[in-house]
Image (tube, rainbow, N blue to C red; front, side, top):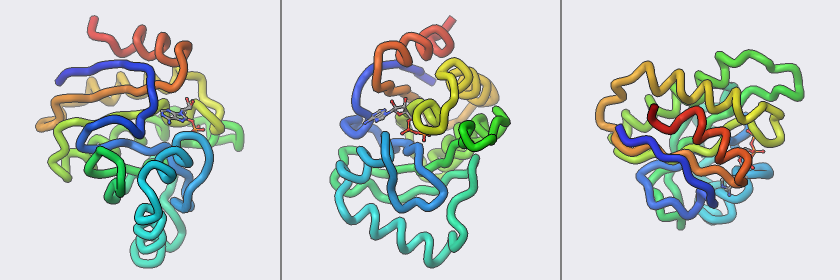
Length: 171
Ligand code: ADP
């Protein structure tokens, strides 16, 4: 598996699956979620609404993941995961690790070979980038993650990118 860390806008990534740091409602939000909904176009919100009506009436719980199409984005799928909201008292790093694990499991089910992750939880939900990168590292080390050979961390600012580089660049 090839792991890379870059700085940029994750909505531009030409990967099989882009992971979204969504909220439980799946109906859009700020940060990377807002950017993904803007880039994907209205078909994404429609698909999320259908998911809510059919499979997830109470929303997607923190630590879980679900896939949709990617609308007009270059990716094929979006894997929505919900980070624990540290600012609301959800301070268990296991839930953060579960976001990465469930996202990778979902990618494997889709036979996605390339997956791009943002810094789940490191925005509005208040986690330190270092804790997010450590959770990602730990879950990647649980692998083999057969079939997934390109994992990219696409960070929005230089500070977060540097933290992820330190934790995730092959040693
Ligand atoms: P959360 O609610 O899980 O904390 P946020 O979207 O608020 O999610 O933030 C998660 C991370 O995504 C933050 O580091 C934020 O800077 C980053 N981010 C925001 N927009 C983008 C984007 N277009 N591409 C990649 N990362 C982004």
